[in-house]
Image 1: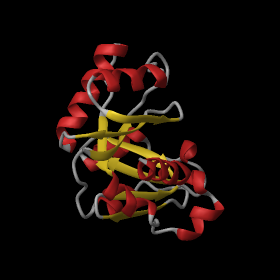
Image 2: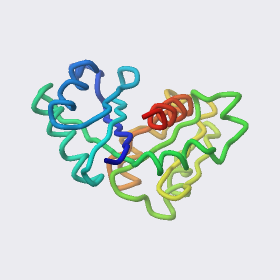
Image 3: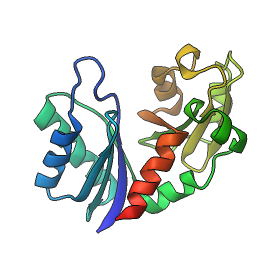
Length: 179
């Protein structure tokens, strides 16, 4: 079995409620091992024999069947996640403003020009760098005030994107390393 981090998009917002204890139970019932969650925003760490794409589909079905709404799942193997947690392109932000530093992951790999295209909308001095399949954004003025919205990210990337802040990246890495 391989260790995975699975990120769910837009859970526990509005009417899209998925209690983490119930999500853990549903994942265990589906045959996943070592299932853990972190905070209420749809962060799963688990072990599975499935490939990433099949795992994403299965988790999406679990959410739909158990909670009645669709949520895109984005899975990465723990080894991939280790690369993210080893450091961002903005090391000074990791210590100074970890809540403003976001790791953005997408269903499909972003194109090489995605950071440049996103920067066209950066009005608050945001900094954006693509490293491999990871898009890193330093929301200097805070993500809530930025013109780089989730919908705009999806449009430019051409795929569903979900983001986690630096503290969450590190915590999920630690959890995946524990089992």
